[in-house]
Image: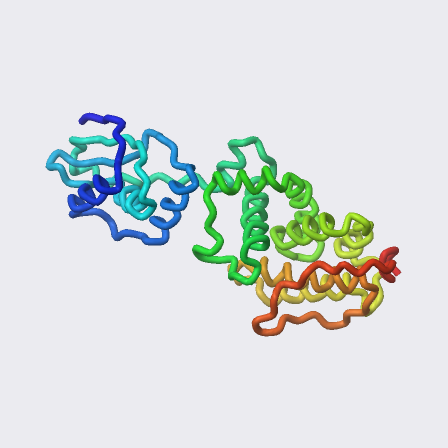
Length: 279
């Protein structure tokens, strides 16, 4: 078995893919993801690469080769020849390094929640009307770290999100994004009363948007105890609608989402809010 570092051009990748006679079905979504990484210059030379068995049959690397073709950019990769064909059954059985793994290795706290919140923030900023599921929410680990670099305040926002999640079952992702975006857009608003009211519910009267948001999400959580779907986008929509009502001093006794409703913009209303002191 011999391994060399070679430059793989799109033409060579196309030639080698013709030797792919016994690989797993190609995932176009994964190919697209790798191709975007190549175009962004995120491709890095590692021990992983392309492998051929002792008969010259491609047994590992079809997604990498297809991505090189799609990106139209040559890259350097490890290429191994002479791998025993019997090794095919144990290749690619390791777990892919996730975003939370990358953040943990970078020394970040709350890596699980932080990874999800950063993905959500990326979707909120780039495609707020898209569903936060499937390929629409897939971003690379390098992108994830770049988002954190641009928005370091998300570290603190996640801590606030964890507190809100414990208080009234909002997803940490929605709470973190809500806190981060509203505090960033409206630094003139003292947000601690908003947070305290949501987490404890103490002293809130009927019609207070904090009480309405709190009760709505607690009710939803009770009715969906066994549901695994991520409700972060819906929760964020409720969060922003309620926050807008709070800073504008409006009563809100009912909170619902209309079919096709767009994500609310953060209110720019500057009058003193009625509920700022928990009244």
